Image 1: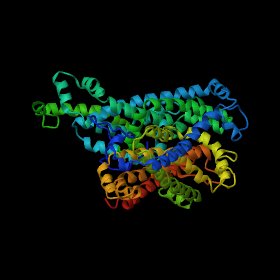
Image 2: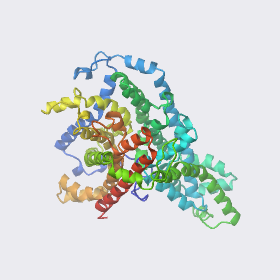
Image 3: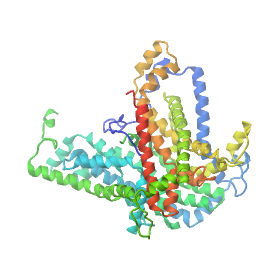
Image 4: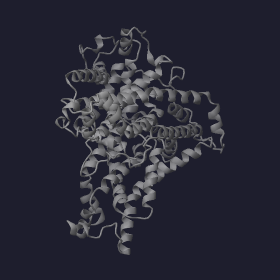
Length: 308
Length: 302
């Protein structure tokens, strides 16, 4: 996640329970915008041309990735190779038939999913306590958590690696996952969201005789659904795409994640169509998730952008 | 509802035992996070600073070397070269990237048929791993790749941009812009949609054209978002690594050997962890200085 050097009272796109930030969505439908502020016919044509050009530039690498991954192995010539003729799935057969790529896919799924569950659980527990419980050292603790966002990841990376290797965590799932569970942005987002929940709900549950853990799991967590979805998608994306940490912790071939594995394919001079097929395999899950949960992706990004 | 609101709330004084119970629960809930933070964030943060004053390498005796690593850094031509690479990359990628973000945000600002689709398209590279995208960008920038074809069409010589020491950073910057400008677009859009339409409407009535309306009405209100983007994008650019690792390996002749790449190389190829930590400290310092400068310049008229 991008480190941030900004006070937390920054323009709050932090979703609150009552009004989730609809980032990337028009709040004002076109009709609400005065006609004079809408582009006229010539402006609309210009806008269309520019948008189309920008879209082609944005999408071209995806198109090339897919078409060339379906290209038979061998020379790639322009523009012929970019046309969808003579397509073959050979590269996919090679990539998925190898022992490594399915294993890397499995590792990536484990790394992403376990991290999401861990981060969400720990951050919601801490966020709830920071928002609704009074205990000694609360403010100091919270702000020192948050201040760590400003320290670049690369400064702590080496000592964290030394620690993990001393504890025997190199080439293990826990060594890969556990250090990433300390996620300050997640705690901050959770706290902000829970601050907006009315105390009366918890009071009522307490009067009804609920224990604290019961309150947390039966009352708080269900109320957190929107922020859990948003943050969960974002953390998933971040771990799925993470590169540097898996690169240094997963040293054996079996413990690579997809990003690290594909980097190694490329360095081992594996034919282009197979490297690209591997990239497509790694991209499809994220792309499908993006299609389904677009709102959560964008809210996660905007939310975490003002995280503090 | 008034009766409900008057119930004692946790923020009001409670009985002593209740308060102790609340504090206990609070600490208990924070504890797992706290432990993780102490072990994996605060500890390594302090250790990273301390390591920079030692000659730590795995398996060898460690000495306190004082400022030796920093003196070495000062005399290391590779460090100055990687610093220059990092700064040039940032100067190429950040202003152009923010401009591209602004362009996309302005084009998709008002809802029209397909506006959501366009936004999704522009945001797609942000959710795509740069490592994966790099596999195709290596081909795009190769001698007989499409980028050369476009350049050839414009009458420029075709060559492998990634193996030319002058063109490698512009090529990497283009990839960086491609992968990041959807993020900036989203941040700017989020801010634009909070702006009241009335101000622009008033300007319209007064006869201000689109350029004037942007210059005098919209742009000033976007300033906090611009500031935020400038800081974030600069920080991200300073840490450029994935694309360098994937596409150039720091070459040709160290022309794309960035600061974080040097940190990685020093740490995990030569296992010179003490020196690598000193590079980390330099990066941290650089980030802070630039954030302060940006705050002074961009945040001046608040």
